[in-house]
Length: 108
Image (cartoon, rainbow, N blue to C red; front, side, top):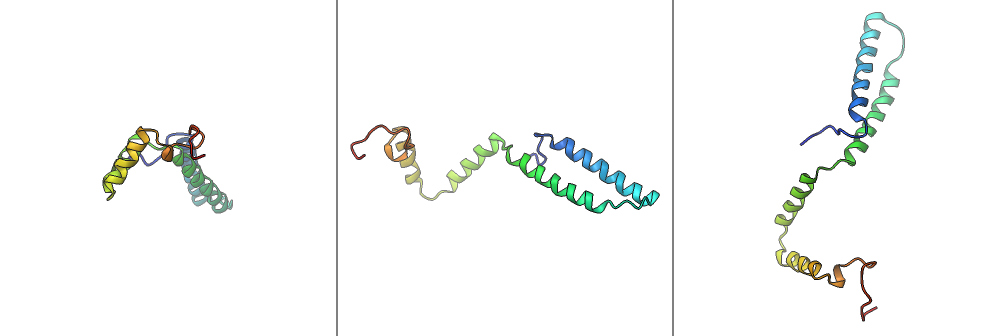
């Protein structure tokens, strides 16, 4: 499974951060510029972490969703209950239909 999100510009953000981080640290060690690099990089790191979480949250592979749903179905101990729910969904029973999609029933 892919760990680094490919959307929302995250790879570019990570490359720029890595380059600036490396150049800042190396430049400060070699040339002793006296420029504080810790706090700007610490704040940027937090921003990069938020970018990672936001980019990761919006990108869920469909095959993962299917495998997870299948795993949950197989781990369920109440197979008859699941079959009953599936049957009611196929029959569009009022108990499993969204309230906006329900037709007027005699119980309303």
